[in-house]
Amino acid sequence: MWGGVAVRAGVRSHLRVQTPLAACSRGCGGRAASLLPGAASLLRAPCDPWRHCRAVDDGPENVVEPGRGPKAGCALGYHRSVTHLQRPARRAPLWLALLTTLCVVVAACGGSDDGAAGDGDGQQDGSSATTDATGEPVDSTTTTEARGPLGSGEAVTIAFAGDASFETMVGSLQADPEGLLQAIAPTLGAADVSVVNLEAALGSAGQPEPKTFAFQVPAEALTALSAAGADVVTMANNHGMDYGLEGLQDSLRIKAESGFPIIGIGNDEDEAMAPWITEVRGQRIGVIAANDIFDSNLVSSWTAGPDSPGLASAEEAHQERLVDEVRATRPLVDTLAVYLHYGVEKETCPNARQVELAELLTAAGADIVVGSHAHRLQGMGYMGDQFVAYGLSNFVFKAPSEPGRRSGVLTVTATGRRIDDYRWDPAVLQNTLPVPLQGAAADAERAAMDALQGCTGLSAAPSGPGVEG
Image (cartoon, rainbow, N blue to C red; front, side, top):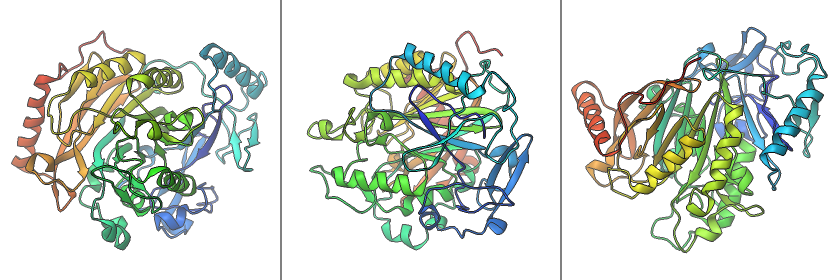
């Protein structure tokens, strides 16, 4: 939404059109596709705006879409825009944030609605365009207009996949990143928005931390996931800083230079906790990520603080900060998901902590809570009117056992706050990579997933008061 980027007190939002397979730095059909320097080389996509991307008019708003890949050729099925929220290191009280946001609305609108429609070229009449410290344009319009619980009234599909560590696959990533996940791409990429847990340090810098397993993958891992249809990855997990502070700084460098959305890590806790927000068919979708699993000897050095880099934490000492983020993001979006790293390895039932966090976050305003870490599938279903998936297991992972090789993609259909449906598309890991199951094998795995619901306390259908428009 070119003129509707969310702004909070002291918050500046960068509007970027994400084109996963056609990372064009020039305009497509006269429209601009904005990505940070280095994105084209990272995503290994020829920057030919006429061949690989096109402008799509949809009323007063315009988008640039990839011309190939799982999300190509579907004007209504791809994001119009992405906002990256950047906050100051110190959070203002919520009442002050709301008051200041109201002032921003008044100042931006100038008492007029003339800028609501826009001309579709990224600059709307009546909006206030400024620049940040780097000289990049900053959109200071807001998304505070009144909306009901169903948002635009359009259904949106959101896909989630589990742990992707790409262990022992550095050579394959560097040789053919775009083709590596081609088997699962039609499944993951079929959703409007797709989220994956990247369970490794990203880059090549740093030294392994003192732990049993330390994973690190090159930047081409983003290329592989993007080519398979992923739109955003979380690195809030117990391997996100496996190569220490220097490794994290390399990950943050890649995040900044590529323009590819990575959540759950940051230069401080505000950046690490910050939501990723996108718009699909008029629905604003937000995703927040946090980690509840830290090695005891690394928890202090890995946890992002007010003035220190690290991972977003969901641990008890920090869970109120996470709850605050959910509450603050709730008014900005129509559908809000939280991706957690939590639970106990090799367990197929959620523990009390997982249930506690799911209840806490749904009560704070999350519509969807999903997670991973157990390296096993765990049950999914409705918690009242919200949806919870306790364990998505492995997605790109060198699993030594048959239970660990059970994989798949979860797709949730939501119309604003109403969760309409969900679907589990099972897969099996073959040579570390997910391959979708078909026919009777797929049916058997779906039945097995249904059976896992028995120990979760979740239900197969909504059990709350319902969500009406």
